Image (cartoon, rainbow, N blue to C red; front, top):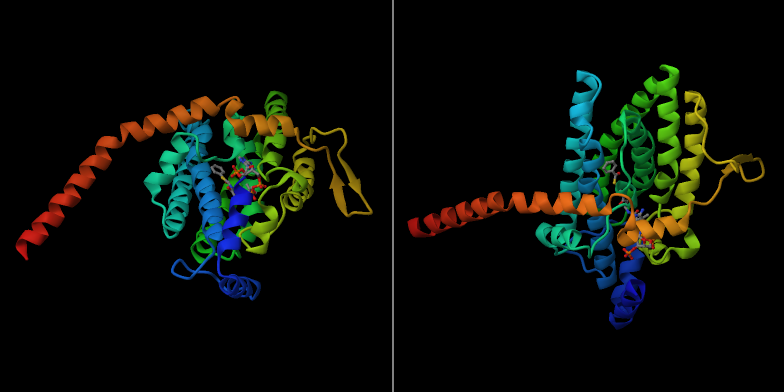
Length: 325
Ligand code: BYC
């Protein structure tokens, strides 16, 4: 429906303006907030950037859950810094979305009442310390795989936000790999925990790339506009190809009996994710959807007095300034 709406808006827009806009995109120019843009382009960006920002914010919850239980002071400090970085990523992205004419409060309200999505991965629980390693290694690994090409996305503020996010995210991925490596090289019980975390996290991480290309609603138009630089399946394949040798180095087994190097394709063959599970999770029925939204709603309500106080202060300050003039 959304894709149809974007298309029908495009047909009502001035064809000359649309052609000139597409020519700028094709020439690799960046589109800036004050430039003319098709309404569908603006809406698609608000959806994707907003969803991405929400993912960063909700994504703090599964890891935040382990800060007080980190096994050493060093791991605690690293995890704390990482979770704070995710909050920062959310803010860069909300700022980029705001340049398109939507406020952060509006976006937040759409997240809280379920009108906007966030990444499916954050609806899975983090059960033990090995999961912290797996999140950094696999979840941040999948996120970077998606975000590195987005540094070249056509919308200037989004592209610039991605450049900063990717710098920090590569540290996140490495800290995760280091944490899981310690477990994989530890006692048999620790190695078992690392394998179990990989078993549970791999497929939800593969789902982060979105539905298969044949079912992706937005890919075609978004790629034409360079809002997306690759298809979902291209990035998923790249991620599998990168992850297999990393798992081998750890002495862990990829939980897929069909995994096999395909000489002809020059890629690994692997089993498709369970798309029923994926759709179920994005419809709100994953293991943690209710908890995640309840936590974000509570944080929003708990922070209301701070927002009210700051607004009251800003209004008083403005009134004093006017009175003094
Ligand atoms: N989860 O047409 P498609 C992080 C939805 S956070 C939920 O292929 P599109 C981190 C999609 O929205 C990293 N929903 O869509 C943070 C659409 O539904 P609507 C987050 C999904 O947009 C903290 C429908 O399915 N990264 O790194 O062309 C701690 C059809 O899909 C998902 C980003 O957000 C999903 N996995 O492509 C640690 C990257 N997949 O909106 C780490 C930016 C699809 O029509 N986003 N849907 O109702 C993108 O690159 C694209 O939006 C996607 C999907 C590749 C995700």
